[in-house]
Image (cartoon, rainbow, N blue to C red; front, side):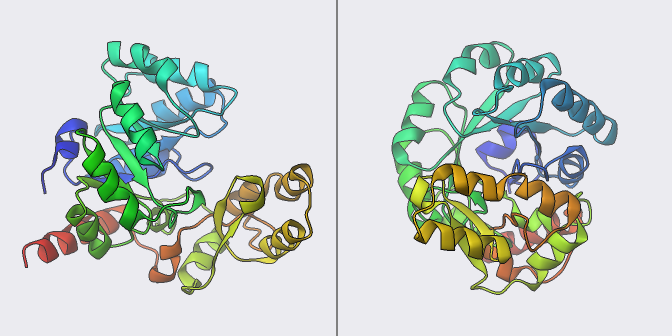
Length: 307
């Protein structure tokens, strides 16, 4: 399945791994790239030195293209943006802001820039400033979300820009991938499905929660303070939503979730940790290798699209 995205990134399959904080490290990125997709190292709030180390470790595990997700709200974003150039990274995705200030530096270095957007307006702005593609991410996604669904956002973004569009949110198998292509996307970005992979350096408790999740187990916290985050329900989310309903301040809510993602990913605390996962968690019933995930997803999508 060849698209403008496979050509742009030099990959076999139009499948991009999400740049998930605490999850998207060098082993997962390399495994996805080795499988023919495009792996990403999640910058999150990590320092430039840590990102440089992650990039070099990934290079030891794969000779295939991979990228870095630059979280623009990070206090280290300026330094990480430079590391991307210094280490010869071919493409970046960006989130939590606009990458305009880094565009000139990245473009001069030949770095492909692919911002994650949750609206048509931002997609058009990113194209205007030289983005090579955009990821249109619907609210089905895990973690920080916008307000539009993938089904409605993707075709509107496709109609609004001339650069390729990558669909994210609600894609766990070839059916979702084929549907995204029918909406005009030229690749999909996948997060939750890769959390439940053998290569993901995520605590087994976290993976098991995804595997056992039902369709109704997804919840959104932070609606009251304008920072909605999709997670799997647990003791922490119940307390958070109760506090939101009672009018708790942003500071009180922040304190409750302090370090909660690390608790889930590293410590396996599925009661008090932040189990970021998309609505498609209910569709995931096993833990597979990245190679199996990528190849099965692509094969199923190709079969459906030829019907």
